[in-house]
Amino acid sequence: MQQLKVIRLDDEFAAYQLRITCRQCRHVRVTDPHPIAQLLGWKTTLADAALRLRCSRCQAKNTELIAIVKSKSRG
Image (cartoon, helix red, strand yellow):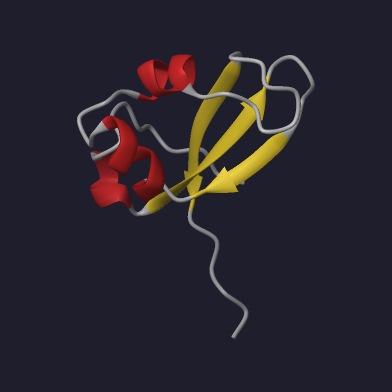
């Protein structure tokens, strides 16, 4: 996966995906930035968003967000 240089959620016209990794249990989820931007706003930085997110597996508030190139569908 190619990593992108994204600081805020509205960078790169939101044409990327976010890889969210829990630093405690190493659970990984890949999502579009849109649901997170609806909650926190498009001007939110990835660092600030990481502080607010909680792991869906262990409930820890210790996540890392990395912007990756949007995967192409196989259709």
